[in-house]
Every structure is written in structure tokens, then in C-alpha cells.
Image 1 (cartoon, helix red, strand yellow):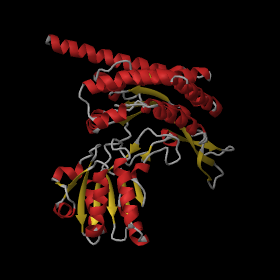
Image 2 (image 1 turned 90 degrees about the vertical axis):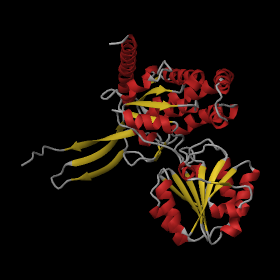
Image 3 (image 1 turned 180 degrees about the vertical axis):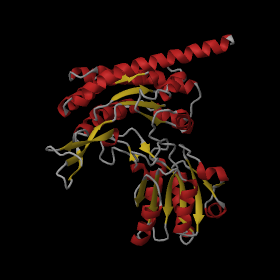
Image 4 (image 1 turned 90 degrees about the horizontal axis):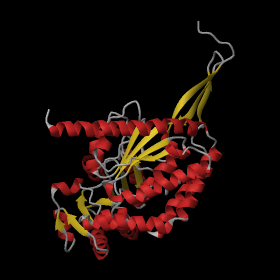
Length: 430
């Protein structure tokens, strides 16, 4: 064995030991959280929100360190935007915690109940998932959103933020722990992995039987690694290749307003539109106006031959553009021969995240809603509404694009499992 492999083996063992230690503390804390009252968990999030509001200057100071380091490393503008906090974004984190508290208790809910002919009373009741590992990259707000959602549902969270946000995320995790302590609940219900080493991610993914579920929040490379290596169940969210389809019955004003908002409101979020499909019957009339408004807002248009023929300044798209999540001021545009072709395009190139039709035709709207197999399908609304807060969930950990357990915005109610409660009065099985 070489010295290098010895060193690597020692490091891997150290990471496994570290994660196991975090899990042990999390298990103890989670057992308390599972039995805690909803009022106590509300108090914890309320205390944490107050701590966040009282530490705005400290949060901004730590975030400035992270942003300056990222900028010095040549990180792109979209990444910097996701990393950067402002007073408004900090207030949104605190408000998000408070919003979570008003949604009812996620655990103990009776999901279904029935009585068997033999008199057995059977109920399906919501329970916490347990210890949840959250692996994320640049967004420090995920620290607060993820912790808050895990806690209100009686779980414990082990957070592994990206190296670019380490100062901000570690400080925010500490504020969440302070909120727990202020409510008399165990601070170890929220723990931050204390290293930037990627080996710690591998140790989390290998922690079968210790961590109950992993939730990745980040770019394609992170999520692909999690899905490839995980020996722990995963809530999948690969990427957000979101589409707008401008139908032949689209309202022109709506088409322009929705397209600009869906792409340009915030280009670096997973709900940002990445492709516009336009029915060929209305493309000559509608596409130039849509494209002009996007270009005036600073967006580059990459189009197929038909789109380039209609849009001045458009760049020819290649095959890769149809399956690219730009997370930037770039959008691909294709002219298609109707709704069936649009649905086929989405099925071929989409990521099952969020897709929208712009139309005044109710029949085609329903066809789109029924036939597009995405976690979120929309009619006449910006794809940037693909967000747990906008859905009334208070906050979200992410948008799950898989088909198991949770799909769409993953809020507090999605961070539960269930058990069956059977009540009898002396029945025996023949």
C-alpha cells in the first residue's frame, strides 16, 4: 500500500467517524423532537427568526467574506447572485420560518382511517422521517429553510453546505441551534458538518442505516454524484430545465409578460425558464415581440432556424441548448408545429421540473396539464412560481423531480413518513 492510499484511507475513516458521531447526536435529539409538542417546535422557529433579525449585520459581514472569496475564485455572476444575501433576503428567511409555523403540525396528522368488518379500527398517521442529511452548494438561505422544515416536522438535520458559503451557513446554523435551545429543545437537532472536504459528502452518502434520507440541493454535478453514490434514500432533483409553450391561442400581452418574468426575474433559480416553444401559427406575430423584450432585459436568444429567421440578433442553437440549464441570461427558442410537438419536445429534453402553457384555449390547456409529466405543470403563470413559499408551504428544501415519496416542492409535510395505528377490542385472527 502506498503512502498516498494510506493517507486517503485514513481520511475516509476519519470522515466516517465524524459523520457517525454527528448521527449519534442527531438520533438522541430527534427522539426528543419526535415527542415534542407542536407549540415547542413553533417556539424554536420563532426564537430562531428573532435571532436572525437581531444578527443582520453579523450575517452580512460573514456573507461578504464568502462573496469576496467566490469572486476572487472567478465564480460566475449567477452563482454569486445565489450566494449573496441582502437585508431583504435575510428578512425573507426569518419570515419563512414564521410562515412554516402557521401551517399546522405535520406530524400526528391522521392521513386516512377506516374500520374493517371485524371491528378493527385502522388509521394511517404521519410520523417524522428521522435524521435528514441535506447537501447543498451556494445558497446560504437553504441552511435556514432546510433546518426549519426538518425541525417543524420533528426531524433532525445534518447540513453540509458548500465551501463557498461556509462562513454564512455555519453562522446561520448556529442561530437555528440557538432557537432550539431557547425553546428548551436539543440544539443538536441541527448540526453543520464541520469540514469542506468532499470526503465528508461521501461519508454521508454511505451512511446507510444512520441517515434516513439525503436531500441534495445544487447543480447537476452534485446531484449526479449523490444519485450515483448514495446508499441512503434520496429525494431527487436533478436540474430545472423549465419550458414555456406559447400556444396558437396565447394572449400576446400575457406571453410577453410571463416570458420576461419566467426568464429574467432571477436567472439563477431552478424555476427560471430555459426554453420557449412557440406554435408556428403565431410565431411570426408573437415571437419578435417576446424576443425583443427579453433582449432589452439583457437576455441572449439561441434559436432554431425558424426562430433565428424571426428574431434579429438571435444566435443559432445547437442540440445541447435544448437540454441546458443555463442559470444565466440565456434562453433557447424553438418554433414547433403545435401542442403535440411541444409536448414531445418537453418529454425529450425536459427534466420533469416545471413547464407552462400560455393559452386562452381551455381544451389545449387541459391537454398540456394531463400529458406533460412534470412535477409542476402550469397554465398562464410564470415558472418562477415553482417555489414552496409561493405554494403556501412557508418554505421548501427543493423541488423533487423524482416519483418516489415526495414530488414538487418539498415542504414540511413532505418530510414525514407514516405508521399504521390499529385499535381493537379483543379480536383474534381465525
